Amino acid sequence: MSDHSTPAEHKHDAHGHEGHHGSLMSHSKVYLIIGALLFIFTVITVALSYIDFAHIGIFKWAFGLVGLKGDGINIVIGLIVATFKVCLVGAWFMHLKQETMQIWRPLLFTFFFVFALFMLFVLAYLDPIPSSSHWFH
Image (cartoon, rainbow, N blue to C red; front, side):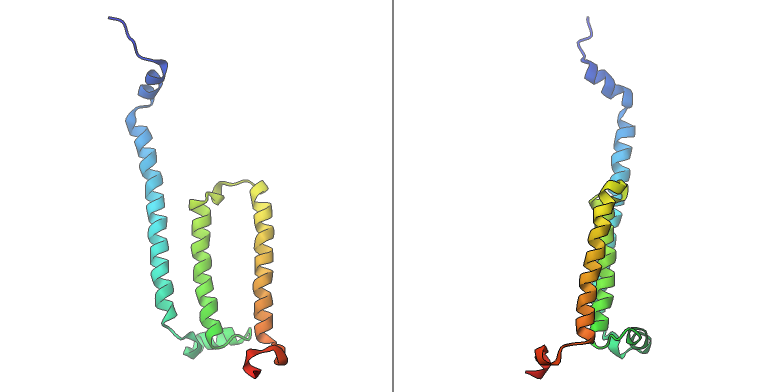
């Protein structure tokens, strides 16, 4: 009897099934851990929304140094948690942790402008124009 197997079948047998599946399982494990972390930090975000950080001394003092008070403190803390979650998604699910500088340069440029836009909102909040503020209508 002659061997009718194709070269592709021989290649597949040379690798063995264990090495291929072990690699898939290790990748799946990382994704499941990242997914679990995202779920946990979503629960943390919801839990933090029920806490009024403006009435907690250390937060009131620390954020008061930069001029934030009231709901602004809660918003900043929520954005910090959201930033961590975005970094997890970008690094692992979008595979940015493996990218070259060719991808990171425009991305860093984008981060700079997003930060600048956030700072515009902070500056507008800290020094409103009295005639345009909804508090005076």
